[in-house]
Image (cartoon, rainbow, N blue to C red; front, side, top):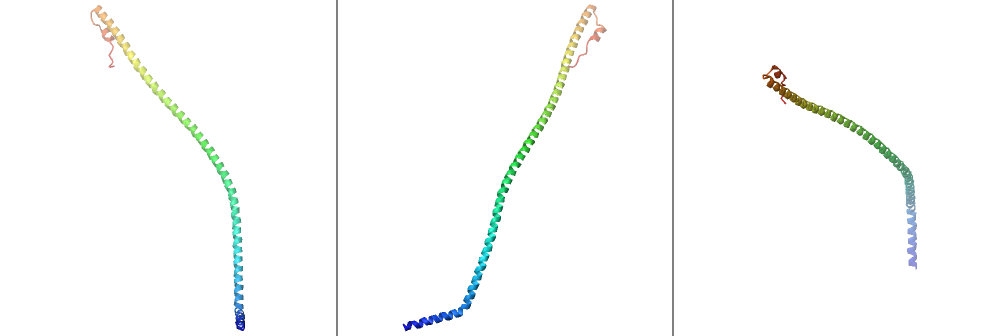
Length: 172
C-alpha cells in the first residue's frame, strides 16, 4: 500500500502545481471566453431585435400592401368602367358621324342620279321630239309634194311655188 500512497501524493502535488501555475491563465481564459460569450449573446440579441423589427415592418408593409392591393383593384375596376364608358360614347359618336356621312353621300349620289336622269330624260325628249318633227316635216312635205303634183297635173307645169314648198332634207 505504501507503494500506492507515494504515487497518489505525487499526483496531488502535480495537480497542485498545475493549479498554481495554470490558475491565472485559466482564469483569464475563462474570463475572456465569458466576455466573448456575452459579446456573442449581445450581438445575437441585437440581431434578433433587428430581425424582429424588420419582421414587424415587413408585416406592416404586408398589411398595407393588402390594403393597397384592394385599393388598386377597386381603382382598376373604376378605370375599366370609365374606359368602357368612354369607349361606348366614342363608338356611339362614331356611329352617329358615320350615319351622317353615309346620309350625306347618299344624298349626293341621289342628286347625281337625279341630275343624270334629268339629263338623259331631256336628251331622250329632244331626240323623240326631233324624230317626231322630222316625221311631221316629212309627212307635211309629202302632203305638200302630193298637192303640188296634183296641181301640176291639173296645171301641167312646174311652178315656183312647188320649188319653195319642198323641204330641205336633214342628214338623219
